[in-house]
Image 1 (cartoon, rainbow, N blue to C red):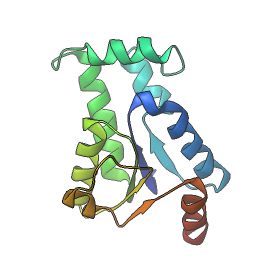
Image 2 (cartoon, rainbow, N blue to C red; image 1 turned 90 degrees about the horizontal axis):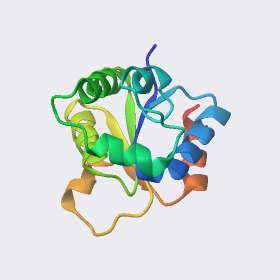
Image 3 (cartoon, rainbow, N blue to C red; image 1 turned 135 degrees about the vertical axis):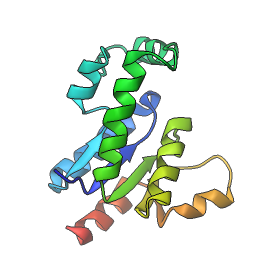
Length: 144
């Protein structure tokens, strides 16, 4: 199934990301979010519904050649390739920014929501940076 949006961000921003997912759910817009993909997280042995600090520490201490990271990478890259657009939830970490670069390089429309620390010319890859949930919801309603 093709997703309209790939939602990227960092696990430490879980509450905000899940709020964004709720907007997509209410509008019946298909999306992929790493926090809501039970199949990939289960295959990697990660419980995204558990203690956030424990999850973050476990994830960040995996080696690059670990089966868990390879599993997550494969699921995420497949979902990113199948999605039409990317939404980066700020603040985001390195992975989210790399995913945005991959999406942009693949010709996908890229969007972001939230505040960024400092202006950066590379943020021009985003067609729009939404200031808040209401602005994003209004935009998505027009799309659907």
